[in-house]
Length: 553
Image (cartoon, rainbow, N blue to C red; front, side, top):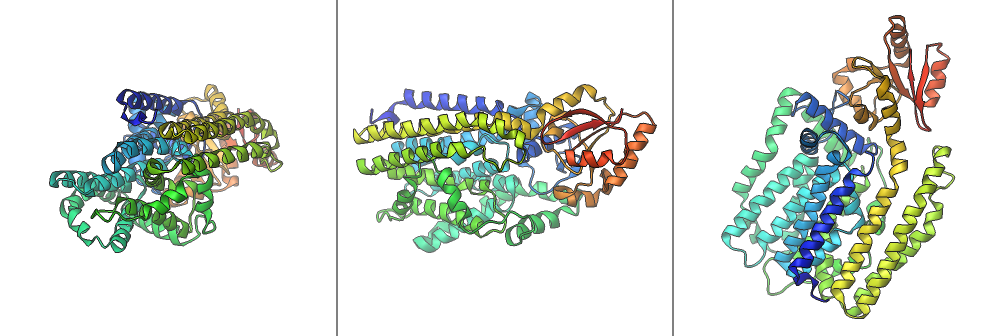
């Protein structure tokens, strides 16, 4: 049982089971706002309009991010129809492919057992698994950056032939280009920064001669540049907004109100690295050990990749948890190399940390439905979620205990496999159990209740709010009323697409009523009470604890 990695039947069977579960769960949950609803709706509108250049949200120009994920989601809708798993398919494939490619690249550079371990580690790490099953840009970026990182390692390894080095480096350049199309210039800036730091620390200046800069840059521009040129030609206002506002100002200014302390991402690493938190520090330290017989130092590059990207986003004035997802493949590779040669005590320590983490989660579960719930009647949903998290914590604790048993009996492959299975199952339970609360946040039930009352030409207004997921489930855009936020830039270009004031909406609503034209509106209960004082005709169609839907007829 210490050579599981050598059994092709076992490894391929494990990969098949992992892939089946990974892809199946993409469709069991509602698209939770804001990110999942936003990116699903952008893709729906792209497929409906067949405009593959100008990205829009709710019919309004939306240039915060490049189009790769919108393209892929739109193609998914075109091939398979509209739905939750279709909206998450690209993200899911990026996460799944990232696990497989991380294992493959690690095997090529460090050996077969390390490759087996790397896939197990990454495929069970909380942040990677969760990000791979949420329709957000972070996994799309991370998947492409994993392609770049793994290809760089395989290309530069000692013993690579000239043809291998050229082909793998071209794949690396393609990965960086796709990363730029996934989320912007960080797709080039982050790998470039890693390479510069690696050169300085390793003194391997000759690596620049092995990058195939000429061919690589041509391929990079051929993939990444066309959309930027075409979108700028159609929308001259896009380059300044995208490159200055969304890159320079987002990084250096606090205009997005997403700032956090310098240790923000270090704190997130504590749960994000589970079940491998007990391995990560030692793996990073081990990565600094130089191989005196080798020219290229892959472990050093992996350490720099993980540390530099974490530091880069820690310095940024805009911080969100998903920003550091690209570091996990590098950490998985380092953990795999460390675990391959770890002693019984070191493996036991890793399992022990998982046990402690599970026990801490067990103690924290009762605090989930605390008094700080935004909507008091949502407490029941959070209380119903507790058994799912409790079960996940029990599985993590039991998995740690079983892994400890295997480690003490020198069953190293089984110890790693047990921790991986426990981690993966725990994350799946945490995600699946969130569905009732996620459904409420998305407003899917309300949207489905609205559909029977809607006709093809019924206008829908979103008053002082914008429900990111409801527009996708309604499969039509809404007219924004007294709402700007992320639409500010687009509405400055197309102000006719919204009603800027509540008074303007009241006049429009009264006109619809006078003309016997049915209209509907989505708003909050506070705004509904305010509208009642305006004396406009209203009938409540449906409501929940977060919003209310009204009609004039």
